[in-house]
Length: 433
Image (cartoon, rainbow, N blue to C red):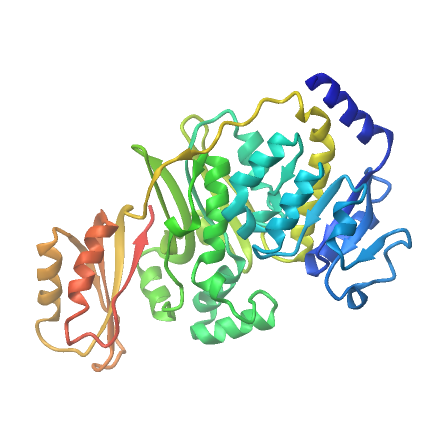
């Protein structure tokens, strides 16, 4: 029976064009339609349906007259479209639409990272049961083929660590802080004006967007099942040009880092700002670029890098996924299932050297007080840095620590935060090797 199904599907894709329905016609949807139209003689994909709310305001003249525009999702789900491309975003009704499309026997391509982070395992299981393809390469790093690289290019290795810059908005803001010395609010405003930040940038700057991508990466690269809520996020909101000045003095810069690592049966995962060495690939990213470094037991480190934001890079990933569906659907019935993701204990208790920035009202005995608390919790000071030129009423200085566990440091910082000489809460970041 498996061979028969595979032969039928191959005949379908070889004998005629594969029909594609777009669900969502925003920035990415328009770019996908444009890319399909521009390369119509190079592939077998034909756009047949476009679904969106308020469709009259979305209709464009450069799409052929044979495309059906609709506000009724049932027109898509009951159609003869072979592949549904979900580009709506959000969890609902996107989840319901994708699930129904799979139940109707259609393959699905999605760029919805929140959907795949929350419901990915369930939807992939349903796609296997229905012998259809669920492709989601555009969910992580836009036009960078990191998911296909982890699945296929590195499928022969045993990966145990993933680390990367997964949010272009944060990288744009941090680049502004570093290079121009502007305030965080000014850098954020410029990111909004440039189209990199949403009106409400919370998901980006507080790490939730990167967290969804990290969950998908962990599932794809580490075969680890983890819920988004299990991954700790720390915001970049409190970073200032002073932090970059001290980081540079130490030989580092600062990036929002997403990392996941399997060690002794535990999945360590977090999204947070961190110091990275100047010679690291992570430090060299500019603007809205994304980068992922995977580490395997046999192949060592592999770097995936490129533009991760914007309509065109994401559209390239979507169309690449569409072509992947066309190629793989005919063979799916004969392919073995991928191993089910493994459930791990999840922790953010990484061991790393630490950067701590304090802002104080200057007075005798401050260093001694801090050193006393750190020694009490067996945390060793590596260095103390203080730049001249700051007022005594709000004096910033930095203490770096030798490698320690996050949990031990958090206990110490909770105690330190009660000192009256502090003018704001301490800021702590890991220092990556």
